[in-house]
Image (cartoon, rainbow, N blue to C red; front, top):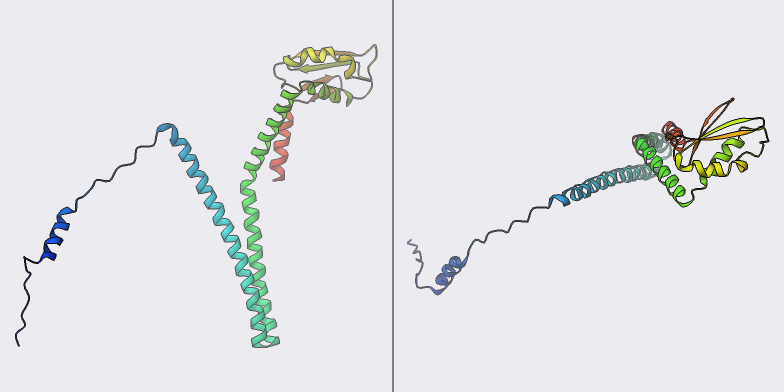
Length: 234
């Protein structure tokens, strides 16, 4: 049996059109994106870091949800098993499954505690920065705050102090000197209050010295105490 093969007909118009289409295909160069300006690179990097942080937090939330979902599925499995296999067998199985559920919940709580421990330094640092900004803003709004602070410190000394020395920032010295009579209600003719300029004292705060001791009421000192308390508590 002889099979004849048809030869391509060069005069076939469809072949001519296909050849023309192939000839019309051209390779166009891909336009390159312009380079990112140097001043925008830190902003782009910061956005990328935020996205990565959001993704990591999203992963943790997803893991928590998955863990709780698995625990719920296991609890449902307990009910189904108890119904199918009988009461006694179901009780034994329930004990085992409840143990797994308890372990899963414990694992979830431990992961939360670990995350809080890791974030504690950042939380403390943020709290300190917020406190510093609040104090600075209040002093800018009301420069007489220092009078209340000095007065409260001196009042805490109680009665009987006759020689009180108040160290203040040079910016507050004149205001305090003008209001000395109102600062110590227990004073009399024998009471002497001396106000001294001290560059080491924070604006709006003071250090009070008497024969009984020294009270450091500087904001920087109070911030350090707050920071230690936060770190110990967190």
